[in-house]
Length: 224
Ligand code: ADP
Ligand code: ADP
Ligand code: ZN
Image (cartoon, rainbow, N blue to C red; front, side, top):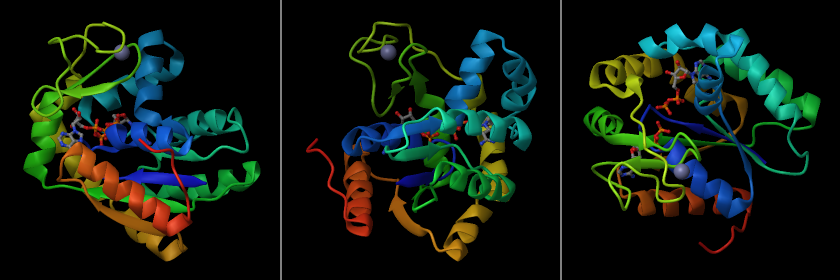
């Protein structure tokens, strides 16, 4: 199984991807996390990506596609893959379509999450994440037990600089212009596109996404 998570910044792809991957025993390829790790390590890729990410613009396709290809080749062939944050434009969608057959895979399904812009800006401004384990929190909607600390590892939580309202708004424009055309691309390619209302509680979104996947693909996840 290969499933692509689509939807604007802040809609809940990371939050839902964590639960769904756990439920179905899938791996995740999260390009934003891979890029942020590259930046922390100060690698060449990290340095090349930095200015784009700070502005909220897309990092050039060739850097992203090379990074994804490398990750994909390292994955266990029998295990499902959830893509979060990739593809981000039609050119990346086409690149993925060219790479997947090399590892005997194809895009089976797309989960498309939606929510109004004001909700997305608020979620972005409240987002915190653990730099150690990657767990996501939200100061308004899903706070940690102790303010500013990861429940799982005690690390100090961080706020992404690209989550400032102005940058989130720019990322929303980038989404509308460059990423949203992928919805049509996937509908026309014959992949199953499952639309999920992301403007509900985290648990309700999870239930809806899980049910949609189970119905479309005859899957059975572990009981949560
Ligand atoms: P969000 O989950 O809020 O949508 P991400 O963590 O996916 O944000 O992405 C953060 C930034 O990383 C993007 O604004 C962009 O600069 C860069 N990025 C992540 N994935 C890609 C990609 N597939 N193509 C180009 N840039 C990307
Ligand atoms: P994305 O990966 O699509 O950018 P995230 O999963 O990182 O989105 O979620 C953005 C922020 O909103 C995080 O702080 C997360 O805790 C919070 N969040 C996610 N889903 C919901 C929801 N259904 N209701 C309220 N807050 C949510
Ligand atoms: Zn943690």
